[in-house]
Image 1: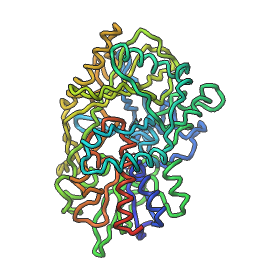
Image 2: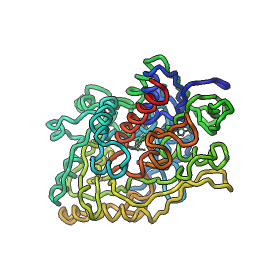
Image 3: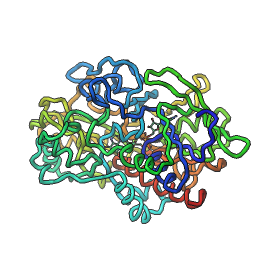
Image 4: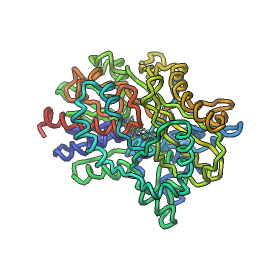
Length: 499
Ligand code: FAD
């Protein structure tokens, strides 16, 4: 409520926020989480909390009148549909040269992502975050994160015959034929539930085109794992549909946090200011970076280091589709289970997730989200004319990612006698290079913050989310973000809070 005084306030309820909320509440610290999106617990008129990909409505996108799908085209035309503008679960935030997809709601990105739970390769982790003790990460914090997230592995015998993973087996075979390795990838989607979906024993979710607009069943999202455990301590409060707009120090050594409360249609209901002893920025790479850059420019937190806003990357994301000869299946699981691992290729490392194309009909399409090692880094800057924060990123900077992915998929096409689809990301556009699912950086650990996420000059301010990771982690990022938050928050509780 307006005027409240809270010991700890967490901005955002994705991976960084959920870890922070659980560990603080377990240490006995009453914690208030502020989340701009909805609390996704109330069913819509169709009885479901979330809509599926084929029937998008106001639950799908964050305040858009038309969907803005990552694969927005098919056979020469746009596949986007008109929708009522509302506080939907998926945001495609537009900057001058890229779109950034993010989850909106209690649980952040866990609500909309593919659930792929990948621990980064140790040598690459050591390269990107040299100030972090890798032994401790791989011994303690990665296992802790995987356990708390509910990560599980697919039954490989079932996988080999499941109709819904025919697309993955086809892509595996063509990758192997061209000399590339593949690896199974763990997931937070309950694979036992998926088996029962396939056997028609339970309502379908991953097998019913549910993923980027949320899953009604089967997925261990953060509201069911970390945040549920935090709530069970009795020390957690969550305020959904509240957007933090301002953070500034008070005379008494605390922080005044201003937020706007909206309803699902976007109408402003109230503006509140809460005072907090400690504030944890967990608004995601984009949200945290934008907030801190704006606060520095507006003089609220003017002593923040110049590194705030720098070091942003898209995890080298680029998507591509191939037109294959093999049936990939009308029924496809929306939860990927395998990647093509060509990371050791020093000419252009690639880890390519074998992605579904759940059209509900046979398309012969093989789709991939390639994660590459792209050297370019963007910077968030305050625009004094518009009063907004821009992302200084150039369209041409995705070229190294395309080059690396092209080496792999040219080889696969050559061996299989297949070609690229050029109708999925635009008209005659092969590469899906103008968006990312994996924003990282903007407030990099040990550069913009100290080695545990503390913001220099402002005791009691911490960064705990994906903005700490310097633009790349070589695999899908949420396990890295979760484990790093576990490490940092444990240290902060022990040294700053005395837990
Ligand atoms: P987030 O999870 O983004 O959480 C930030 C939260 O803060 C959000 O809920 C947001 O609404 C809230 N917020 C932002 N600004 C404010 C504000 N001013 N006030 C209040 N609240 C605010 N990663 C994987 O590892 N595996 C995958 O399979 C995978 N698939 C993906 C598929 C899609 C479609 C997308 C979009 C992402 C995917 N990701 C995947 C990426 C992963 O979800 C993100 O890396 C992860 O969610 C980032 O965690 P975070 O804690 O940094 O921030």
